[in-house]
Image 1 (cartoon, rainbow, N blue to C red):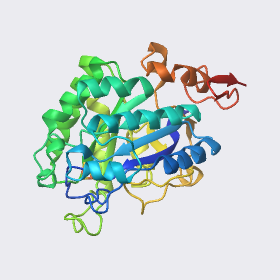
Image 2 (cartoon, rainbow, N blue to C red):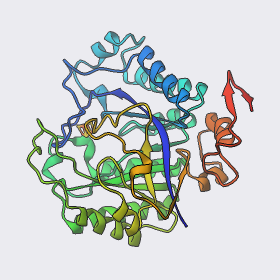
Image 3 (cartoon, rainbow, N blue to C red):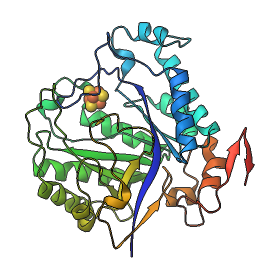
Image 4 (cartoon, helix red, strand yellow):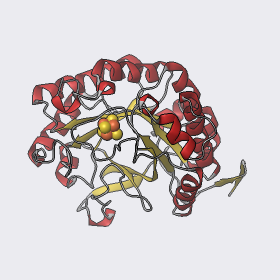
Length: 341
Ligand code: SF4
């Protein structure tokens, strides 16, 4: 029976302030409405995730929020001590530490970071991520300098040099062609061949949102998504999982086409990027014939290699079973830095 994996997570929206303006995005907010999550709210979400038995704290945010005029004011109004880019990185690390203390493994997707920032954050993360989205020059990214594919590939390569297990992916239906998808997948494949750190590649269909410039765009047809999964299966090196989001598209055909993973599914928080699309009940996904297994945000082969942040080691070892997937029967919880069975 084929194994299909997913991660039980809590989704922490660190900030919706973003220096890009992607044509399909309804997550980003202008500075007068944007917010950085307060400690109290983050703490509440982390506690909820912990109580619901989650394994992962997914920390997501807009790209380069520190470049937006008014960033310092929003930092101050969110009750944070400092107002600089470096202070914000410190805050991200603090959120990771809060997650670890509650028994959750952080997976941070913080957009483009400098090498130094990546080195600061990585020890507190089981894995990290950044969507490549596309290598094509699409109008949806005309006002999104951080979506420059050369910069994103360079960021993913940097993570590879640091041996950070990495999640990336492509977004389809944003104006790219099939040939562009092929080029994007080949770029990801090359990154993995060079550094061996790509644990999963998300194939994500556009979900047009009211109020965005792409609100009237047609989402890709299911057959196009299926075709892309088949392309990914053919191009990506063996062992790199293909992930599809079951709240955006019926997964059965995609799984049959080669998808291996359903990504993060949260019992406590919405998909903040697509809040109008609730997580499905796993039992209702018509996936009879597949063995659904819960995993950690770091994949088993990287656990074997020790490629996770050194601050996460104790918790990774407590949560992983003998096969590297999430162990439920031998669950150990860590409280105040001490393990208890
Ligand atoms: S999709 Fe991401 S990078 Fe683009 S505007 Fe939205 S938050 Fe920013």
